[in-house]
Each structure stands twice: as C-alpha cells, then as structure tokens.
Length: 208
Image (tube, rainbow, N blue to C red; front, side, top):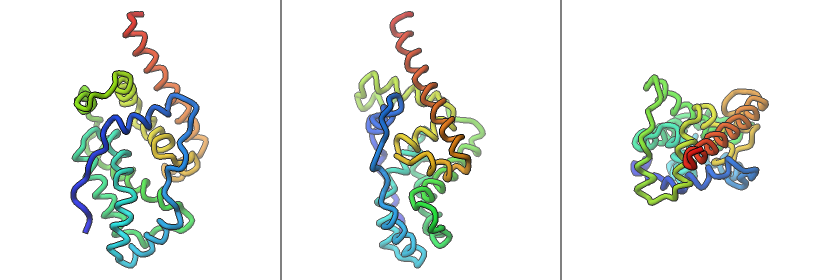
C-alpha cells in the first residue's frame, strides 16, 4: 500500500534551505494546508487508501529532508519515512483536531528518528560529504553543510524545523513538548553557533 521507492533530494537543494539559517530571513508558505490534511487524516482513519497515497505524496519528500540531515544515512532516512507513514496509517484515528496535521506528522517522524539514534547509542561520524562533491556543489555550500553537521542534535533539529520546514516556533514547541521560550533559545544559540563555525572556517582558509 505504501510506496517503496523514494528519491533522495539532492544535497544542494537542502543546503539552499540551510542558507536561511545565517541571515534574518524567514521561510514562509512551506506548510501544507491544514484543512485538507485534516480531511485526509479522517479518511485514512476510515482506511481510505487513496487518502493515504495523497498524504504520502504531500509529505514524503519533506520528511526525507528532515530525517536525512540527522541520520546521515540515505537508507535509514528512507526507512524512517516508511515507518512514519505506517504509523500514520495505523494511528490516524488518534489525531487530535486541535493540533496542526503537519505538526503531528513531523512529531511522529521525529520520534522514529530518535528511536534510531538511541539504537546507535552515538551519532554516526562525519563521512567527508562525498554526496555533495558528487553533485559538484559550490565550496561555500559544502562548507555550510559541513558546519551544520557539527551542531548538536538539538540545534540541528530546531533549525531544520523552523527554517527548512517553515514551522513556527509555537508549532515546534508543541512538536518537541517544550516551552516556546526553549525553542527560541535553542534557535538563537544554534544560529549563533553555526555563524561562529562558518566564520572560523573562513579564518582557517585565510590562514588567520
């Protein structure tokens, strides 16, 4: 019922979104319409397979873009998307109308990512980013991606949700189960840390 083949977004496409992290811009209009998603979830709760396919088409790429930077493994990221979709199929009837569907969907995906990271017991080491090199990505983008992956898991997560996926800080707080102030603090410190890492890289290249 669920589609088995995913196409991983090209790394430079992800990095284009990450470029927002170091300036004052915000990402708008990235979230799929809530009303339509609520309707799909009601239909999925009634075992409507067409509704499941439609939800899959809306969210699969976005979930993959969220999972891959945290897992650093294509197959695992794809598996997480499959597991998320299966959980939605099985649990659509538990969706609370007061929540935003996208927040609920990403919350499930976040839990699946967390389960895999806990099973690893430690983060996978950096791999030298051969995927970026294979796409002929500009040096500045490669540097941004490298420094982003040096951030803590909490910082990577909040930046991906706020800037790359376009969730509001209130929605992220609901998803993570923390106060809005915590999300604001993590976002501020994550951006500052990323900027410091990027500036440090520039200084090293200049031999300063």
